[in-house]
Image (tube, rainbow, N blue to C red; front, side, top):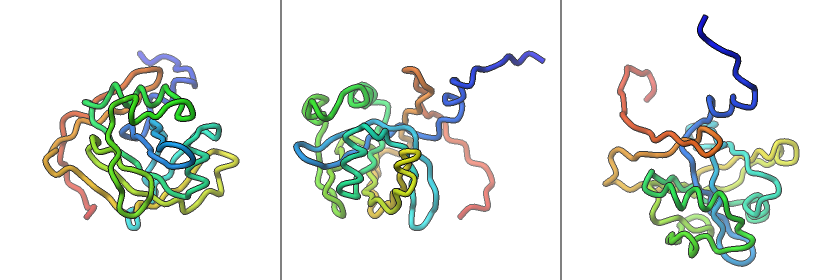
Length: 178
């Protein structure tokens, strides 16, 4: 067998679930943006998204306080501001201004959309029972926006330790999913 042992600390890079997203939230002061990759779809309708947000982060406090946020889905063109937002504290800086992003009014929540993102999901916090133990929050998408001109968005997927994979070719296979 040509396989070798993989340290358990590297498993994260194999199972990272999906596109890196940028969470916007409101609290006191200016709107905040947090880059996040630990999320998972939990149900189709209504769409439920489970996510892990660090308990010490401003976003965690904002979402628990306001019970809402926006999941913004960037494409590869936003790689630098996406990483910049992930490496900067919202307690210290207005990330919209610092990274040249445009806040846009949401329809169902007070947190802003990021105009430059391919898609935006307005969310309400519906369950925080696992917040204390695992920093796990369950969000319900209450309004979804998408840029119709972007037929094949190239989203980024975090592999860990500063490495990202860009989504590429779409393959269509038989499916019973409707």
